[in-house]
Structure formats: C-alpha cells, structure tokens
Length: 343
Image 1 (cartoon, rainbow, N blue to C red):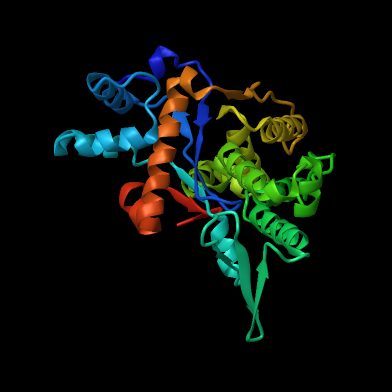
Image 2: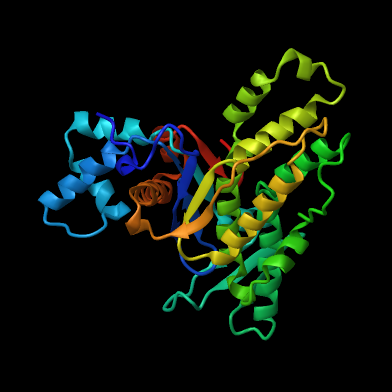
C-alpha cells in the first residue's frame, strides 16, 4: 500500500515540492544540502523509520542522524527497500570550500580556538597568510566572501532563468519588465546586513532558487519538454521560445514549500515567480492563457510529513558527503547537483 502524504493529495491537486536543508561544517563556509520532495510521493519508508524509532522509545520528530542509524540497523531486505524508495530524490549540494580551493585559498584552523583561523594563498609562487590579528583581516575576509557569493550566484539557476527569458523575448515581447540577474545586483536586492555572514545566506538562497526552478535545470525535464513539442512548433522560425516557455511554466506551476528560517529568500522567489507568471500570461501568438495560482511559503518541518521526509533525506545525504564525498552520494542517489551542476 502506498502512503501518499497523509492523504493530502488528490488527482486534481497541483504538483507540490517540499524542501528542507541540512548544514555541516563551521565558520562561514558550510556545506548545504537540500532534497526537494515532489508530491505525491510514497512516504511509507518514513513511516517505517518512525515506527522503529517509537519502538526504541524515541519521542518527537525523527532527525536525520537517528534515521540513518535506524536504516543501518534494519535487516538487509528492509534497508535496501528504503534506499530504493529515496534514491530518486534530487540532492542539491553547495560546498563553498570547493570555490575556496578553486581560488587557491586555504583555511588554517586555530590550534586551541576554532574561531582563531587564518587564510593562506599563493600568488606567482609567493605564499601569503592573513591572520585574525592582522589589521586588515576583516576587510580581506569580506572581499573574499563577496567574490565567493558572486561565484555561487553564477552557478545558481539565475543565469538559466535569464537565458530562458532572453530566448522567449528575442522574437516576441512577453517580458516587458527588467530582469537584473547580475550577481552584484542580486546581492544588492537581497541586502544581507552582516557581510561576514553573507556567504551562508547566499548559499541558502541559491539552494532554494535551484529547488524552486529545478525543472529548468533538470536534464530529464528538458529532454521530456523537447520531446513533447509538436512538429508544427518545431518548424517555427523560433521554436526555442516555445521550449523555454514550457520549461518555465513547469517550474512556476507548482506549490513550493520551504522550511522556516529564511523569509528573505522565500520572498524573493515568490516575487520572481509572480513576475514571470504575469509576463508569461500571453504565448508567442498573443493568445491569453491562465497559469495556475501557486503558493511559495515557509512551513515548520514538524507540521508536515513531506517536509520531514526532505529533512531526513537532506541530512542523510549531508552525512554521506561528509564521510564518503561525492562518490558515496553517487552510490546512493541518482540525481546529484554539485555547486549547480549535475554530476
């Protein structure tokens, strides 16, 4: 028997996505993993884990660490069944430390205090080190975070959205408004108050945008959309307008729910989706059509089983990444996006 979302789904319901994230690491450069759960989804695996937890006397929401232990405790048949049930959930992972290594910057932890860290890097064979005690340390770190924030936004779905908009509007003016996706402009709009925490907020923002516009970046959805275009549409002078329009409509025609804790990102995504809906209200022939109303909201994970499922899977994926790296994730999950790119 399939247990669909506590009976909340019906055949007439809009598709919905529930996304919670998990973090690891310290300082500002923390790994973020988000695992969007598509509804309807068979969640019997989570009920099984929760039942085992109750048998062990566990009360309350079952978190990922305990859920992972329970899965490993089960017999092989039940354990493999659970892994098969969750293997197709997309894993969206952002690791800022990868960008640091790309820049040739290393973090040297303090011997007695984790916050007493320093940065080392090399320029033309000359090694440099910036310590916390240095007078310019704060400004150097804020500059580094600014560079990393812009790099993360470049790898986010925002350029894909911009590309879709450009292709749609190239031959038909369906986007009269201005879409400024230049990284500096986005950071100015988000206006994070604490510069040194900016990188954490940008990572969370990029993860949520990826989840909200997942269909625009997903190769399977892209291939399916391309295959669904009629020969008539493909013979048009500008078929890409149809293609990107359909991809955008798939992304904005479903409810998106996120865990509480980042209303600024949620508001940005909601306003962006509403703007795209308004500007897409006519197709390339000028014919008006209605895109369904959707919700972009934050909810508490403990109040919805789909959000709890996302929380458990993202936490398990984060633990696997911390201990086994990308190779370990690929052994367990089919759809992995690392720093914005499918691997």
